[in-house]
Image 1 (tube, rainbow, N blue to C red):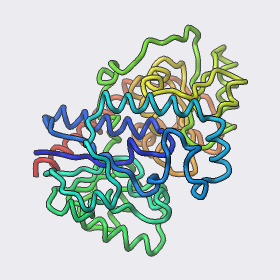
Image 2 (image 1 turned 120 degrees about the vertical axis):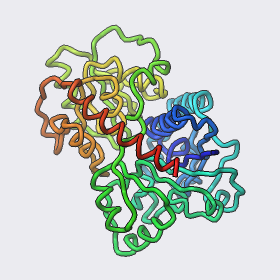
Image 3 (image 1 turned 60 degrees about the horizontal axis):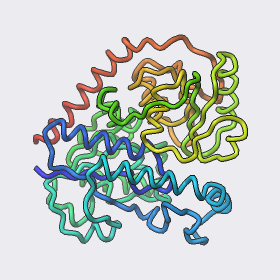
Image 4 (image 1 turned 90 degrees about the vertical axis):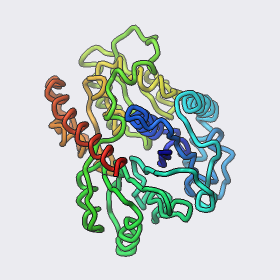
Length: 368
């Protein structure tokens, strides 16, 4: 069976570590299951069709906010360097379709696949797609009519739909043969829009173990003990201040991964980190302060202490930590209380059960 996966991954506007890694991980899972004839559709969502991903400064000014324009000037060289690292990782470690597709091109293509799997992240969030849904992520395109259609670990972000979106969501779900969601609240909301079964499964990154990622790690060049700060989108001053206070208390250095070049005046900041840098910095940190779901996922995989901060765009981190009995590591409204050491023996027991359930669901969907 020839399988294609489809998601927000290699064509995003912000070079997101998690976006690449969940698709990398899911492809590795399929290969482990024996489905070696698999590739990731190199899909360019409508939202990012106009964006010059290596040089955002060259993006049409009509599509640019003043803030993004200013940031693109400040990060011109570091962003280009980061882009090159991402491209090298993708070309070396992931199998993509030979052709890239816009939605129109994908709709009109003759696809050679028996099965298409839309996997993970906010692919079912209308907020991400300027108020509408992307039909490709429901496999509701003419080119996909004859394929088996699976949704694995889809996320609805906040899941705040208006009346029009409610109707559209229900209609689009009719195209999907097997449905699973990443967040529990996503499962509940999806069930309100379909009579089909909806499973609660893990993010693809958590289906693999630490040993599956060690070949991607670099030798650490940092001798000092450090805490790691990472926020993928908007700047979070409160998170930074809490992290620096924690570092000072424990006599750790502060290291940050972000696009905010001015942070270099305060502490070591990686503005052009690649995937391998991201993983290595998490693996070797004494503690991670982040509002990124995937930074939390890899903190758990590598058994590192961490604190996951709330973000306005969704409850996905809170949902995951609740399911693993780690709610004390979730920081809401910046009300930080230092927690006890994480008992990863107990976490792994719960996680292993969830991995088994998620993998069995996927195996059954593929076999039917």
